[in-house]
Image (cartoon, rainbow, N blue to C red):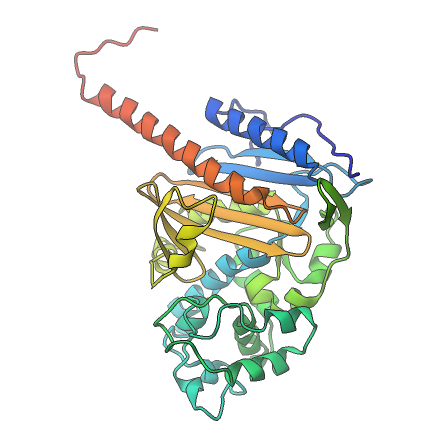
Length: 390
């Protein structure tokens, strides 16, 4: 049985490492999920609550591996499909710089992506990033995991009969994101180089990288774990498969990096990530009705769409921009509220469905806290004769 390292729940400012007093609701949330993690014997996780302009609160739990070091703010994890939030911003920046166009045909991005059906000219960049290609959802993910070559998978995909015309329905894909890397390779570069040059380095994200080598060369990195029986886990090897589709699932980052990324998404780095670009990628485009029936989320959701690399939810009356990630041995979630300027990130080195409980529970508590805070602030402002005594 995996023996969890419990230690002390840490809440601290990521940038200066000084302890801070967290709000009671957040402390209670941290305590509650730790109890569930202990019960399930989870290897490790870290989560962060970020409020624009204020110190970040970060919690760490468990170990990098059974005999490894404790999880730390600098421990690197795989982000899996949370990588798509980086890819969408990278593409948005290239469009803003007139190097690409959302209306650009995929066949123009990657000339090899064409078919006898002549559909290559209909499929546009915005359909790829916006998950509205029309192909069967998760088409040929099984071939990714069977280690088929990228070119072969893309060729087979291009010949697949679509369910709908591009832009007409939500059809989530991983394989199709390979055309993004294909575009950069045509220009003697790579997705990893472009992302590093355009986003990672300008934001000074110290541990973020793209690819398997980037993960394994990190000074601290969390090993992947899979379940072998109820409440028992074993570490496993890093698989290459989804790293071959890096724009879909190939980014690695520590919680320190993710706090920086979230601050950018909350508008604290306008020179790198402008408000216009954030708005562009999180504008609802395609209705994703199936999301509203997710078991742990459905009681909170009244609407769900996909934008450009982001899910856009109506969560109990509040807009929530969200994305999750899952590859062998890892889970990840990222979400932020543009209304309140707050964000949340969770990274796990285990394939645990507990993350499906933790994230909606976090936002239910968070919005309740924020609503109450706003009501109190409003009542004080509307009571000019009130005298506050200390």
